[in-house]
Amino acid sequence: MPLYVKHHDINIADETIKEAVFLAKRYLKERKLPDSAIDLIDRTMASIKIMDEVSKESIQELKNTLESLIKEKTEDPLSELAWFENQLKNKISPILSGQLDQAVYKI
Image (cartoon, rainbow, N blue to C red; front, side):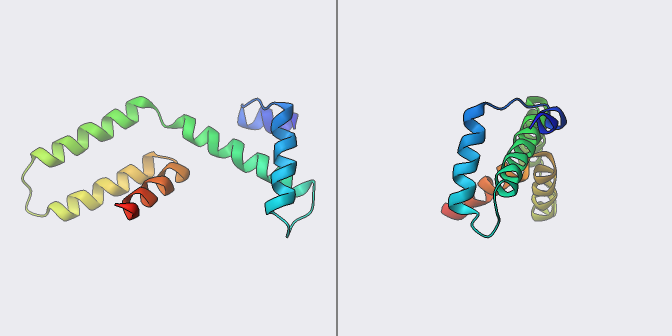
């Protein structure tokens, strides 16, 4: 695990490793331990790192851009919103993007 901690620059508790083994045994039955647990930890650490890289400044920039788009009267508002959606998905993590997609479908 030290290599993953160094690579992702994220520390993990011993309990996290135990939980990863438990979850891998329960949900990743097509793969064998310890590979499945290690992969689960690696993917989780990567996701956390990606989510941490989305800064508050980036979110504020996106918010300002959206507010500008709303205020402006353009000839093709749908293409402007499609462009904004693309910008949003490029800035946020895939996990957060998936959660946003799920939220849209629940509305």
